[in-house]
Amino acid sequence: MDKFIAHILVVDDDDGIRSLVKKYLNENNFLVTTSDSSENASEKISIIKFDLIILDIMMPGKNGLEFIKDHKKKLDTPIILLTAKGEASERVEGLEIGADDYLPKPFEPKELILRIKNILNKTLKTEQVRIIKFANGGDRNNETTPEIEFCNQNGIEMLWGIGGNEKSNSSSWILKKWKE
Image: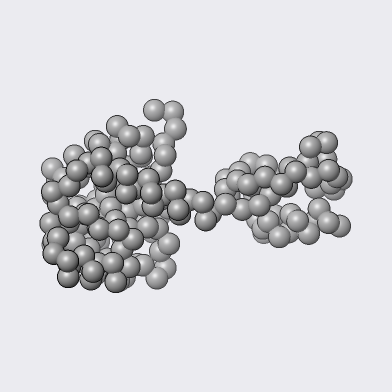
């Protein structure tokens, strides 16, 4: 596997479910980190930026809904609830609290993959930033004949060599400098 589609955190207290989901996601080119509790997941999200979280509701300690309540306002990572609680009222509660999708157990692995891809297609597009690439080899000081391209923040860092220069970290600065 040369390229992963996304980095996913799987949070479930059931070792078998965690292993099965991780294996299936790995086979479909996803990088997977697992966690056996909400508390452990909280530690991991404090140091790693995940593209998506798959979260069980019924876990010892803090349950999945409490995890969402604690983190959803400061966390823009999409969350899919994957849980044995499948009643309509429970699904509605999970979605109202802030989950982006809800899949009851038992589940079809292919359906999980499709739900993940649908969410990622929507969320990863919103992270695109406009940048300028100069067709004539111009640089930041000699900008002419721009071409507008789209890429994510990593692409900006690679193109501009950002390394602590705060003003370089903004597409508006790039456009402003080009207009000058």
